[in-house]
Image 1 (tube, rainbow, N blue to C red):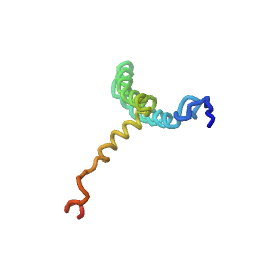
Image 2: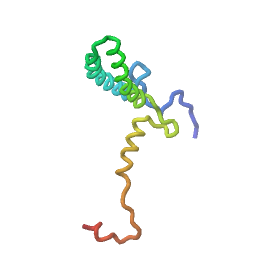
Image 3: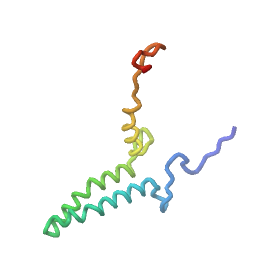
Image 4: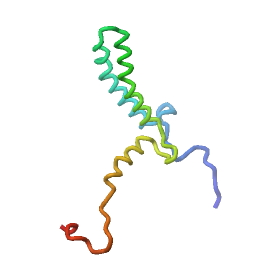
Length: 112
């Protein structure tokens, strides 16, 4: 059987938006931007001084920006997963743990 080298990476996420952002990443950026658009003006209006309001707005926006960056662009290199997929697997792991028993005859409480 003949082997052919493929010039592109077939297993990675396709960058369909402008050639460097995928649809998943765009969804995270839009959701983070909408969240910032909703609450940063309220934080800015809480403070009477323009500079203090600006600093408070930047500080309050940092957690959202960090979360968007981690979930949209960070990869778990060892497992070849995006970080959001890795977190979803970790969250769902607890539901995958079952009750294991020895033998072939089920207990009475399992039958009911």
